[in-house]
Image (tube, rainbow, N blue to C red):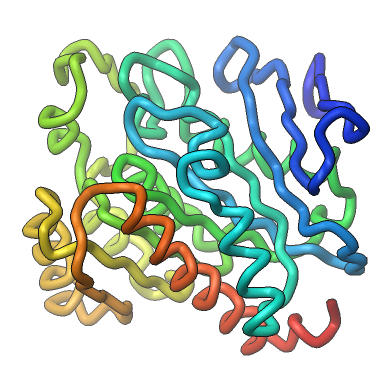
Length: 272
């Protein structure tokens, strides 16, 4: 049993493919929440898992009930023949205004995402245990997706991000906590570009985008330019829009299509 305790919502009271899970996390040393979505009626031998990371101020329900992530997935399955996927939407651990999904002195918010969230997914839906894992996020969650995806290319089959912070110092424009209060215990680089250079020869497929009216646009352009200079293959897109849920709801579809393309490249989509 990967968790000392696990509580799973009763589908009779919720339905619609959504489930809520609370586990006692060894990485965080406390209970933590995850929302899951499996498209109803799906029967797959192996169901890929898309981990969606929220931004500052948010929690596990943000991608569902502010971003409508499950609606986006359903639409793409129905109208674009997207292969089925499970959405795993964890809390970041609820430290301050945002943990940044990194290791702090008192809790490992990175290990929570990389190791424990997939374990919880396989308890809810056993068909995910050996299936590909993808990671995506917005803003602070975009930072988490880019950095953790780069640091763990053996775990994640592809990476996507929207409106991303590219290093923790950029959170100072959003959060109440100071850099000193974070009390980080990371031994690995914190800058996304540095993490990607570490594993440049084995990064999975990578894409990211940002709205042209987003305050983080220059940081995303800088990351794109740095990846180009390092000759690291990636996709970068700019679209109309700002740092807001209407943008993320629209462009989550780009991430899911990107993951589906990787599944098809691996010959996995037809097996579902």
